[in-house]
Image 1 (cartoon, rainbow, N blue to C red):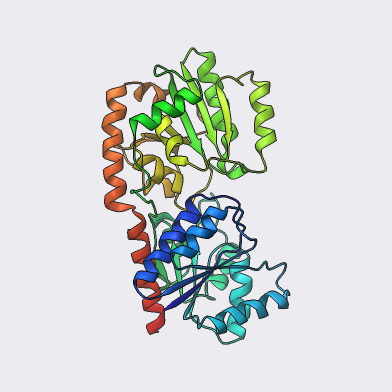
Image 2 (image 1 turned 135 degrees about the horizontal axis):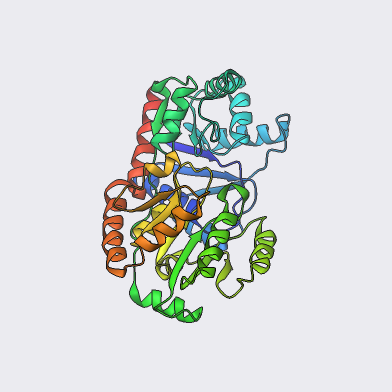
Length: 373
């Protein structure tokens, strides 16, 4: 079985998505299958390129500029023919929808896609126009791999047949992400953070949906009230300068630190005492999974997909519009023994329910099912 995975995005770092693709290439190779991945650019990380190819994967670079980009369509058709593709797996919108229409016109039917996020934002019940649009788009695919139960339930509500919907949650490499006390001390020493300081942290793209501005504001308020904390923000993105200005305006440059892109996220997670995520929307957050695998308790936004991962034993689901909720959670997690207890539980939960192998096995079962139809 040969799988063509069309990402519909760029690869600018060596992070969760890239690790997932490497493990997937390795998994498929062991089953005498092959993974061909199309990115919109040549990935910027040479290490990712080398690791992906050494595990049997093939990388291609093609960008779809519009629905009418026939050059792109012909390139994809050429890749399909040359590599004897059995299943086409598209990922991000809108490219996944555009190429699916063209492939169906060319009589390619074995097309699946990953639904990484909720199909209709944060509204309670989607209007008819939204439901109609979603049903029409999802009719292009033989199967839709939902990144969480919440995403699947949302697609069901817009009228997508349950027979098309599959869960492909998880994706955390627990052999890569685990806690190490020595690494924690080294990284905190590098940042000149003593062991008595409560370190909050997040690993995220710096984009509006992640609402890092709320996390910065709440941390600033906690600092003003005398909490001995620091906030570390790992990641890069278009809002970097805006967030940097916000930190300067709050006079928190010494206590709220933008780390930028980090190639070694494990050491970053280990340096945290508490992982925080203030997102307005997620499908299934890889960073929550990775932080929990590194035995970190979490304070994350109380949105449906996060409820699939976080329960009363793992940390706190909070309303990130409420400073009171945030500070209450900080107080509850100020006890070191409580954090250690939660951390041990968190790692076991990820190993048992959300590992990378679990996700890959679920995806492979969908490919096999689609081939039989």
